[in-house]
Length: 58
Image (cartoon, rainbow, N blue to C red; front, side):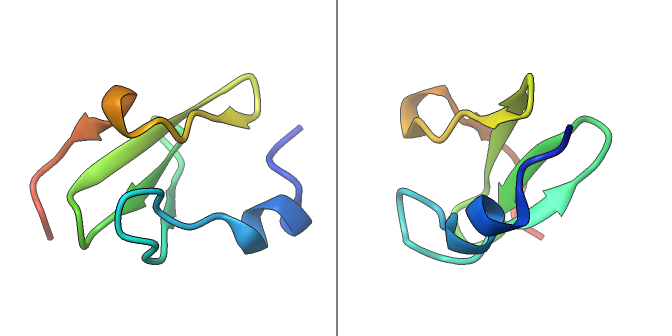
């Protein structure tokens, strides 16, 4: 079961408070402003900044 729409609608990047975009494979939430990817494990987003993966900014 994916993240509920209600939860998804309130999630923002914990670092910059910016918008997140969904990525499906692997399932994660991406902050293009910060260049961070937050993993989703067992339909639960891991929003800890120190555990986010650094990615190249788009």
